[in-house]
Image 1 (cartoon, rainbow, N blue to C red):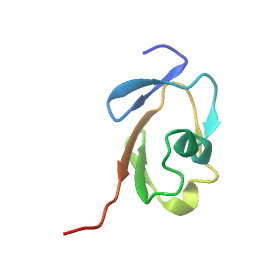
Image 2 (cartoon, rainbow, N blue to C red):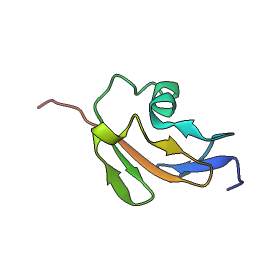
Image 3 (cartoon, rainbow, N blue to C red):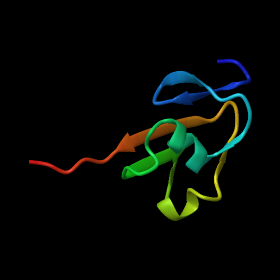
Length: 69
């Protein structure tokens, strides 16, 4: 992983520069979906998303929630 990437769900993902989490979710097409985000091994409550900035080198796990039967 280079300095301009993050690890997203176990895969290298380009970031370029620090980005607000909501912007990253938007770029991934997940802004309007229910998601659980773990940043560097710590679960983030949804209320923390707006104030969270993702920096190169971060490790993220993003899980989308789906209802169904």
